[in-house]
Image 1 (cartoon, helix red, strand yellow):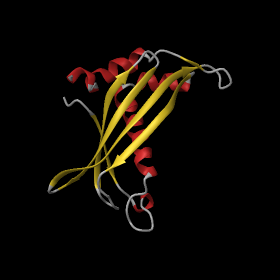
Image 2 (tube, helix red, strand yellow):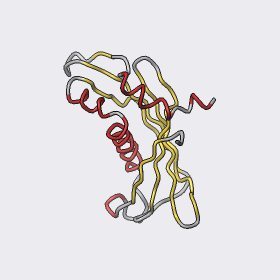
Image 3 (cartoon, helix red, strand yellow):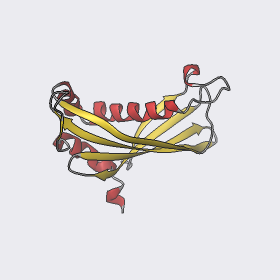
Image 4 (spheres, helix red, strand yellow):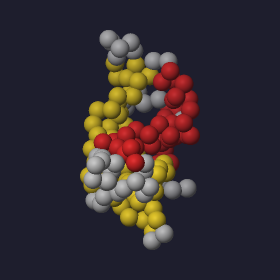
Length: 145
């Protein structure tokens, strides 16, 4: 088992700008999609909890770009756990272009998420759900240090 969760994506025309390269905001969308697919595959109980009163608030997101990508490039977005607090989780994302010549790193990002509960007008921090802790354990960059 690898130390990251991988989401595969093929870039579409709608994700590019007039010049033909990928518009930067899509990298952030792919972070969210990777996180969602992780929950679907490894923590379905958290998805049920999200339909109740659990909320995952993205507090911070960033992305650093190394190379351009264009329509029909195949990507692997690799998510790792880099920090875990009582109520917050931080992930790193490596974006890698896949082709016959191998792998090319094209970007790297991070995302910090807070776990919250309660009605929208009185939402308060809550501990990271146990099901999420269990699902994240194999993907921790902290465990490799």
